[in-house]
Image (cartoon, rainbow, N blue to C red; front, top):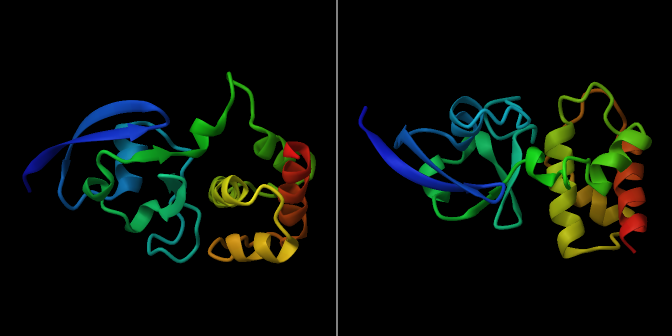
Length: 156
């Protein structure tokens, strides 16, 4: 299959990559850009482990064609760090034990980040709705919700 040159803005940096038209954003992020924080879970858009932000909106990288987001602003879990340190949201997940095994965590954090950008002081119901597309197989979500609430309180 013929490759096309894509210009992707990922975590504030422009990357020119050659990829087939059928290349998924998840494949390009992990295999070509070396950003392994975005996880491949179900590979069908059902678990949320691959959630990234595209123009501040959560997007499932496993079902998004890389070409469809060329020229848009893409953020991965690696892009949330601040001067090499965890963001307040990442720190809250660590402190409140919201990570459990950690596999779903990047997707959870990115979905929560999108929520906190549009609603800095969300209710528990808003948090649950924002995370409803993300599956955690380790918890009952209590610690994850507490993590998001803690991050929101710290931003207030």
